[in-house]
Length: 372
Image (tube, rainbow, N blue to C red; front, side, top):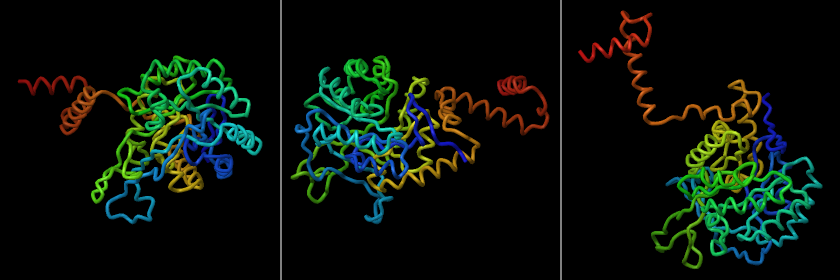
């Protein structure tokens, strides 16, 4: 049976499946439950020093279903939008939770997601205090698309490469554990902020966070969704519909920074989904919306499916196939040349007079005959 364990930046994951930052990691009970079900790691819901500034609204979710589908069938949901903010729990409560989690699961990977205003003292305080509480790693939330832009937090910070580098440097000055920066997809070129994070010393990046979106408009009420007292805001789009975009951006990061850590995120619901991210360079794969829809137990069939994929192809470890599909990306111009060469070869093979001769000489002769 294939070995799904992987070591990343000194962190030992029993498998590459990590719960992404969000409601599934809202407190110690949730995180301990996830570890008990077999998840390789958990990223807690994003925390900040001043939780009293966070005020969530309801409803905060909107869903896109297949037209005519059974509304009770969660598999019919292909798009999911949220306007939820970061954790509103007191910071000290989180420190207590981190200690409890590590006492219960000392060998599991607990990743702390943090977000703050562009203040050096705030970022460094939150890092130092969470380290003391025992977290294994940090994920810097520089990418939430709807979270507190008036305080220059989240995406408002992650869209500015200079700010990304500045904040990451603040963190790296005091961090004693691995640090990943979570990238926003709401940019022209995701490798630009990723490069800023790496220049600052971060060991890795996580990609992608949710895509800024408007789910739709209710044609009866004429109100955008989700509707809060008749009004709404653009929010973060996730679920399986975003997977092609996430795969593309992960591919770009992996090609640009082949020796850096990448945690892939975006629409993962099965082991086959995860395999695609790993084939495009991801070390670990994060799942958040999927857990919200199907529960913590979904990790077990995901592990089985990924293992079956590896056995089928003869891969004994994650590293055996990580990034294996990157070499098959090229330019459009080269695709034209590859197809032209394939067509010439096919034409030559149909003519028995050409068989057995050198392919280059055949191509040149065919081209000369065609010209004449």
